[in-house]
Amino acid sequence: MKTSAIADIHLITFSPTGTSRKIGIAIAQGTGIETIAIDDLTQDCEATLTFHTRQLVVITVPVYGGHVAPTALQRMKSLQGNNTPAVLVAVYGNRHYEQALEELHTFVSGQGFRVIAAGAFIGEHSYSTPETPIAAGRPDSSDLLCANRFGSEIGKKLSASSSPAEIDVKDVALPTHPQEAIMQFKQTVMGWMKQGIQMPSVPLVDTNLCNNCATCSLICPTSAIPTCDPTETDAQACIKCCACVKGCPTGARSFPTPFAPLLVQQFSARQENHTLV
Ligand SMILES: Cc1cc2nc3c(=O)[nH]c(=O)nc-3n(C[C@H](O)[C@H](O)[C@H](O)COP(=O)(O)O)c2cc1C
Ligand code: SF4
Ligand code: SF4
Image: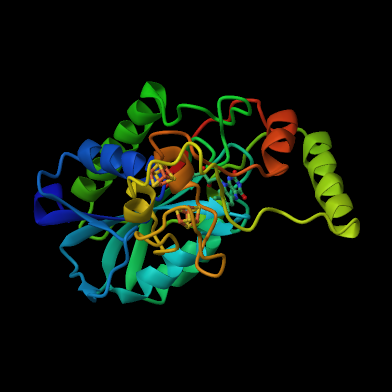
């Protein structure tokens, strides 16, 4: 399959705080394939998206708790490949991507896709704040260059063979945090559970700062914030993605989770992106 045999690329992304989307665009642009369509599932998707063998699908999704964000998997049920080549990317906040890539591989294989490349990229952690910065500002220019080069390698692989080889996502390299940091993180979280320490179930709203602009309501991927009263949040619907926190123009929304300082303490060492073509 020469690159010219690929008619177009579809970037499939679910990206509440925008990092997965940015990385996906840089990868797609790097392939050299001119026609790029973006199927952004962040704000739901009712339609079934069907792909044929002469299309390339690039899927970029965030990691939540070591898994693919559940809402992303839910929304990707509408994807249907037909032996369609796919590139899988897990975007994580500098801690670990754990089962996410394997989960995604199993999922898309069942939907008719052939995985020809994969990667694990770093995005600013959803819980990152100026006081507790976790991978702040990522993807940065060096990450986007890496994503672009990854795309270029994918383009070359597609040009070189009419049937590009499938890869095994288990061969994508892992983060390099010391075992001690991983153990201390696990022990602290287990300690919280034993003590019954509750995590915030929704972001807090400072009603003195809220001007009712409803931006948060518009950007919330699960419609958890009523437009008529954006100081409210539906705890059943909220996925704690922090899009509303990062998108609030007045700083009225915050998500004071104890995970943020713990992540800073144990996982501040910069992780690099890993790819496999
Ligand atoms: C509920 C939740 C759980 C998360 N779990 C992890 C995790 O297990 N490992 C990690 O490194 N980052 C984790 N993150 C951080 C996100 O994977 C990261 O910030 C990602 O860049 C967000 O993607 P987006 O900008 O496309 O929304 C989590 C974020 C949220 C909101
Ligand atoms: S985005 Fe911020 S200021 Fe605007 S309605 Fe939501 S909480 Fe209020
Ligand atoms: S209300 Fe919850 S789901 Fe909606 S944007 Fe805020 S954190 Fe995300």
